[in-house]
Length: 245
Ligand SMILES: [Zn+2]
Image 1 (cartoon, rainbow, N blue to C red):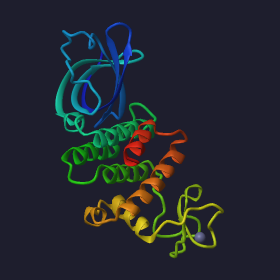
Image 2 (cartoon, rainbow, N blue to C red):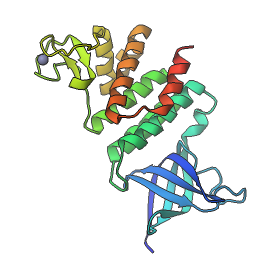
Image 3 (cartoon, rainbow, N blue to C red):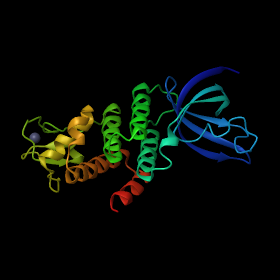
Image 4 (cartoon, protein in one colour):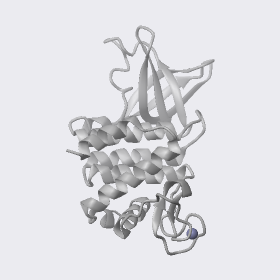
């Protein structure tokens, strides 16, 4: 049996048998892993509530034939604590965890930049410095970019012309008048500027944006993300419901 240690963010858990759980974790060095936490659903479990989504945990595992077994778990930082009492932040955080899980398809393939983005996103969300939907859209744009799907925002996705007129998901972002496919959205210039600011981490510009441009940005980013993931991100529906209030 081979032992290893790593730290990571718990993305999700599901029940296994009577008392166990399978825990999916995005780790710093190993990438996405799935491990069995034995007896975790018993009240006497030595893992307690450490293996819950949002928690940054330090783990010791041993390699199993099909699934690795978690033998130790220590909390590094419980990011969920700052989110559970704030529904918009909680749903934004859930959408981040789900997106990380979906964008990182392979297990045990190192994904350090995705790990660091997720930790940074959860920390920013919990600090309540910026509007949760801006934090979520910044996370979506950057995690898509790390996965190789950065949208074109400042030149035409098809011919690289600098003058852009529309945003076309199927073309890969902004397009010029000549390359614009039928039905492409024509967002405000400020909306595209907001997307650039979020991708770059320019919070001064992002925080100063108007709510109508934020709403337009969120719509485009969500559509772009969903197109790339092929299936909808379930948690996004809750975010949208919250925004509509
Ligand atoms: Zn073009």
